[in-house]
Image: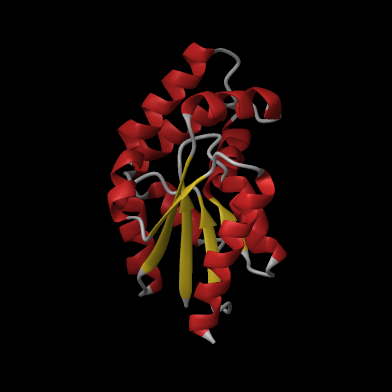
Length: 179
């Protein structure tokens, strides 16, 4: 099984990259959805759920919950939203495979504007201070360390179509190696 993990700071373009994977017919499991589901069950915010899960069950907890949703019969699976090396290790160990890691980056001002426009998720920042605090929290989980582990680094600062084409090129190349 080929497991592609897409990561990056909030607003970088992970969801768009995941949408491209879906367009290619690949199953996508989103770690953020796992956190939002836990938050809904517990009646707490997503950020609180994220911290609580990690404190109660360890740094790999969200990866383990995500793995429960991975379709094992697929040859290629995309996981959106890893935040640390420990989560990548958990995925690799559980699925007995090496992850291909795609790290999406974009300038902070661009990410902030995207999140303000998106505004549909409860954890989207309303102010620059909220945005910077969220970035800091994500980096404390270990997200910054993943860039050193990345197999591909995609800079998302042009048009959506150009970014989608870059993602499509990488995923198509990876898929062709599996068949």
